[in-house]
Image (cartoon, rainbow, N blue to C red; front, top):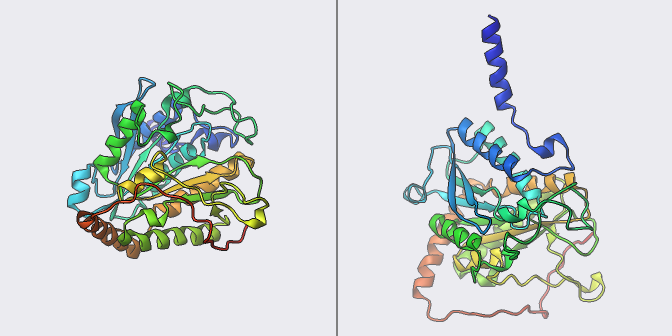
Length: 344
């Protein structure tokens, strides 16, 4: 009887997987801790598979966790079965680490609850900038926690969020291989903001609608609107990314022009609706992680109607572009048009 009780106790401990953040809310994971966490998830749960992908400038390879309730673990199977593919990228700037912690906890919670919608395949890059994550210390001196974190530049000191189209880094070329292989329908790249002070914990950059094919523009508007509504119900009044004011705040916030050097601009080139959350660096780290967790949870939980809309819109967008004759190459912010938003 004692042996049986001991074995059951050990099994319970194996399933009680916690992150460094959950042990100390002003702490973010190290690279070995993060990868070990994902390796354990893939070992414990049949509906998860952890891939080792292409190289980075650090000498280490990227990882990709794929979650699917019916074990649809390849892009070929996903397309054959008509799955909607969601890709989440974390740690492009490891000094902005809350996405890495939030995504790890959310992946664990989804797998435990078996709560991923059956029509979805969820792909998560645990950390994109491995070299920056390994370069651990304190580099964002105005940031309110955690105690230690990674560096903005990668192993060759490239800012990877300026390298999506020129692809000077091995990181970028490996990311492009993942992106073009899986062809995600919607995409999110987690960040932390800096600069102005305001009450909002979470701000959001979404792919500018006029960059999307006409068939995708209604989807972009409706999906973004649903994220704002659902975040409000979770206690987070989200606003667009505070890129810069036209003088005083009451004169307006200038929309961020996300060209293809950035992740969301790159996603738009592939008819993928992209999002870049930017939490407020002056808010306490626990608030930033929990708001990122909430946004990721809402992002990967589309309704059946939204899933159908995503499929139809992307199919129509690819049909449109085959017949398209001219393509815009440059963009400018139109300051003659504006929307009104509540800003705290």
